[in-house]
Amino acid sequence: PPVDAGVREKLHGVRNRTNEAVRLYTMAARQAVDDEAKQQDDVVLLDMYAAMTEACGGDVDKVGDAFLSDGLHLNDAGNKFVFDQLQSLIAARFPRLAPDQLPADYPNWRDAVVDPSVLDPKEPS
Image (cartoon, rainbow, N blue to C red; front, side, top):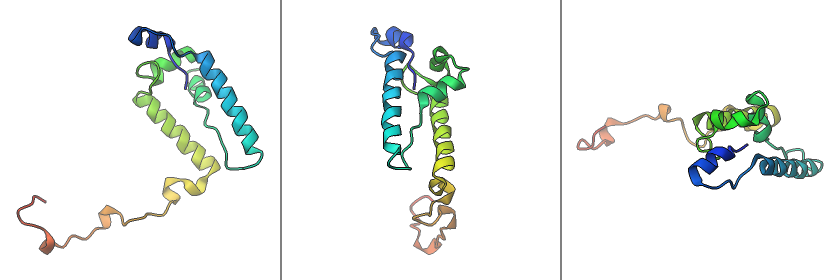
C-alpha cells in the first residue's frame, strides 16, 4: 500500500519510505505477475497501492489517514479493506477457494455433543 512519509518522518525522524518507491515496486511486481500469468492462469496481483488510492478518490495523500496507523502499517480500516479486497479477488478468480466452499477439517464446534458424565465437576464449565 502507499505510505505516508510525513507521518513516518514525524514519528521516527526519518523519511525512509516514499510513494514513488512504492509505485516503482508495484510496477515491477505487476510486470513480474503479468509475465508469470502468461504461463500460469492462477497467478494474480492484488494491487493495494491502486486499490487504496482509488478508494481515496485517486488522492494517494489521503491513504495514510484512511488506512494507516503510523504512515506504514495498516490500521483497523486498512486491515478490513485488505481483507475485503482479498475476499473479492478470491470470489472472482478462485471461487473454489472461497471460505464457504472449503470443506471443514473438523466438525463445527456447535455440533459437539458434550457428555456431562465426562466433565470434571471441579472444573468450571
